[in-house]
Length: 266
Image 1 (cartoon, one colour):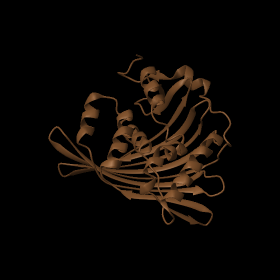
Image 2 (tube, rainbow, N blue to C red):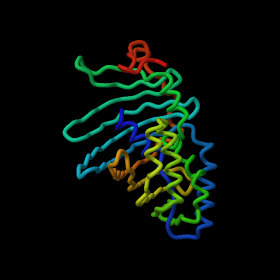
Image 3 (spheres, rainbow, N blue to C red):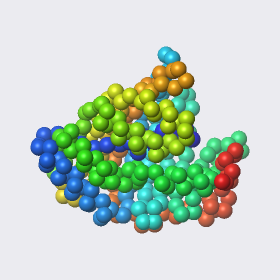
Image 4 (spheres, rainbow, N blue to C red):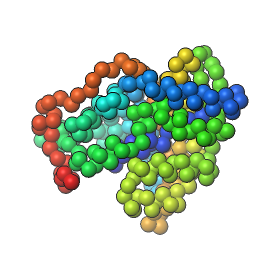
């Protein structure tokens, strides 16, 4: 669960920019890309995330691979993912729809499907939806257009950003606060330091649809007297625009899924 949460947070904080032309042109491209979002009703996403967490001389390295298909209206998602940490590997599967959020989890008796509490599912559904709607972030990032550069190459728009400082720190905090509603987690963000952030986003020149993304974010914060450094490297590719019909949770899963132990419905 913690690794999945970090994965979602990482997806929620993905940003955009560009390399080569004028800053105003970069802003115009972002505006057009944001408008094209209205034409997207479904898509597929392949995502790779590497994360290093360092504290007190110790380092935890995790990798997450995810393949997903999603629709916007109704909002639904089907994903398979693989998580590796130390010598452990977890393969799992997830559905999200108006039926709720379901995940396949390992157990002593073998894999089983569990259903997230309705309250937790509602919180997730209210989060910013960059992971299911990548063009939404282009619209949000237009206010940072002066920090963007743009390159046109092989029929693609390549948007890039390499930055840090208070301006982008506040943007990252805003996204993370919406994904971390607990008071203790929000307090940890008060002393968050954004050491470096880099983004590369490639869009199709004909329709402004995202094709791929790369992100690196280096941040630090203090909690309980300890300094924690987190470095995230993510890459993703988008495909199958408007080719996915309906995503439904199999009836067998809905009928047999169990509540997550210790997390009864609220």
